[in-house]
Image (spheres, rainbow, N blue to C red):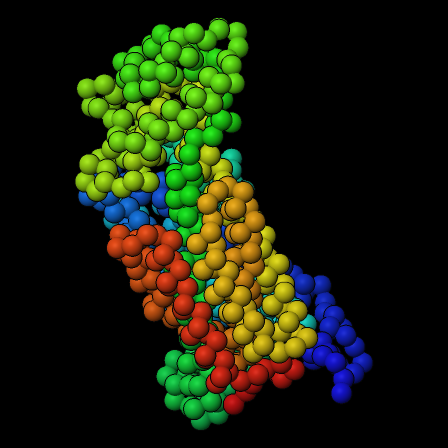
Amino acid sequence: MHGPQIESTAEKGGIFTGVTMYHWLVVIIASCGWLFDCMDQRLFTLARESALKELLAGDPKGLANVKEFIGLATMAMMVGWATGGIIFGIMSDKWGRVKTMVITLMVYSGFTGLCGLAHGWWDFMIYRFLVGLGVGGMFGAATTLVAESVPGRFRTLALGSLQALSAMGNMLGATISLSINPGQENFLGSFSGWRVLFFVGILPAILAVPIMFILKEPEAWKKAKAQAAVPGQGKKVGSMADLFRQPRWRRNTLVGICLGLAGMVGLWGIGFFSPELISTALKEQPLRPRDVTNYLALVEQLKAPPTEAAKHIKGQLSPAVVKLIESSETTSIAEETRQALVKDLNRLITGGSLYQEQVFNANNLKKGTLNLVQQLATKPNKTDQMFLNRQLIEQSLPGTVRELQKTMDNVRGKGMFLQDVGALLGMFAFTFLASVFSRRLAFLLSFAVCLVSTAYVFYALKSASDAYWMLPLMGFAQLAVFAGYSIYFPEIYPTRLRGTGVGFCYNTVRYLAAPFPYMLGWLSTQMEFRHAAILMSGIYLLGMVALIWAPETKGQPLPED
């Protein structure tokens, strides 16, 4: 018995035999289309919380349920994604893969930019739906173009790489957020950081130039199109009904939907809420000695409070700590005083509300802090109360305590970047397993690791250091299956239905998956956010069960009928 072999190599050549410069250009340009698509998605994931908190300002009830609005915005994009996947999937079969790529690129980049001009949550939701139209269409057009353009031996590597390189888009979005903090106020004049992030999302539109002038429609598509045009000679191109009319394509479609639903809910309904998980973890974390950036200034301001707010903070400290402060030297602060001060500040942070309207002048508080006051007035919450108390201390004693909002933005950006590094490795790992062993085994292992890692991360992540090693683990598992979709879905349909089938499997599941982000937000109001995410991670069992009926395509030519 021979060991596993890399699939589909011709007798006279290897994987790269017959691969020309044009084939490489197809893979690179198509990968860039999906890469920038994913960059825009990542910008949204990192900016949505800050965006909706600002857009809901003046609506205490909305602010109190901001996680539900985050879920709604994500749901709007996923519904648009599903709709665009179907519409543009059919268009790619009827009009061509290249034309469809150009249209979808302009749609997702243009409306991402418009998100930065949103005036309220309602128009923000509309823009996210329209972005989703372009996002959904790009994947089907790009993967189908690559599948039909490159030699069969090279197809698995090309499609796996296309999906894997999309993680570079996620990483690019996370990197941009480190320079443009979404929670920062007045980043460029009157613009908030999250608005500027969305403006950056317009730039991928430039890619339309090489798509139009370099890429050509695949010969397989031209042939299928020509045959369909001859009465009585060819079968209908891009017929959604044919996906269900014939038993073979019906079975493949149902399997594809189940595989896609498991991965989509796991990623968009759970995994991409890791920024909110980081926020929850850091809000619950106590003030640490290193979070006090200037002990001398802190003690000096508490000795002689410059404002009513600072005087109020001092009045809440224990008499013993006040005595230590009053007796401290002006040149150095004793370690005993430092430890006692941090401990007592933590008592204030974890205790009752420090906020008193007559003490804290609203004009001197940041917009985000005022929004938090409104939110807590409607719906008290221990974690957010701690966050408010921390912000009141930071702003009452400026320049002495590290701003937690900046820390959260920084950790979220770095954590998501590392999650995307894990995703990149996971997608290459899936491609390797699918080539050496089988598609079905690669899916089975991936779904099993997804289930375990997702539940563990949402249970155990408690600090920034946890985020930096746990999120790559979860990203490795959750995104691995998406490489499988790029490889597997084009392999289970004939040329005349390939764009329609890929678009249907990859994007229609978003109609089914769309309520799950909102469900997570709603469940978070009924139970702890972490527990809600762990409960929903059971969706990965659906993907494992669906593999019972999944056809194995390793080493097989693309099907025709």
